[in-house]
Image (cartoon, rainbow, N blue to C red; front, side, top):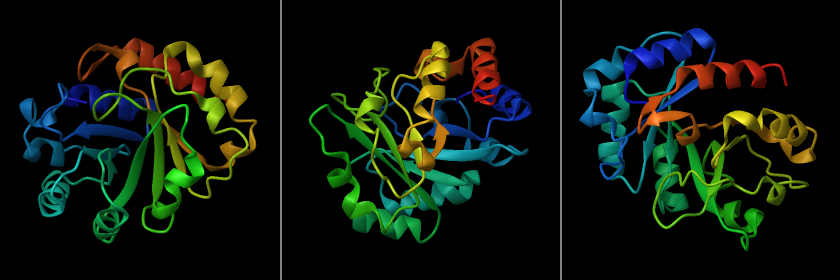
Length: 205
């Protein structure tokens, strides 16, 4: 998110989390639009999430304090040890970019005991979201043993597929659904009508 009025609107919809990207190379880099002092002032039930890529841990934790973040998503090549250091201070979601050939349980095993949650996204050439659909079939039947965010090119018309996914054994650990580019007018600016409709549908699943 790069517009705090939209963040307030999400809060009134009952959306649980909003993400702020602190990766300078991203077109959604939040500090281009909003200073830390204004992010810190965001109130309501919505939880502020910081999205980071290979950030220096001291700098990351300073931003957590400055912006009043509730949790962080780590989308880079952070080692288990680096994740554990950050997780001693703030709730950590470790993101994994998944390819069709990946063994997901093997990929997450070294992080199982050091982070709080996982996020599964589509593998791309760079860091962060690709907007490409993640093959949810790869998760079916798995025992993740940790709450996870489902991400990867989720679209407004995917509510039905999510309802089907929720019947699989893996969904016992499904914690949240992460949406972004398919709901945007431009980077960081959401089509709130699309978001509102999707949230309404998902909350009835």
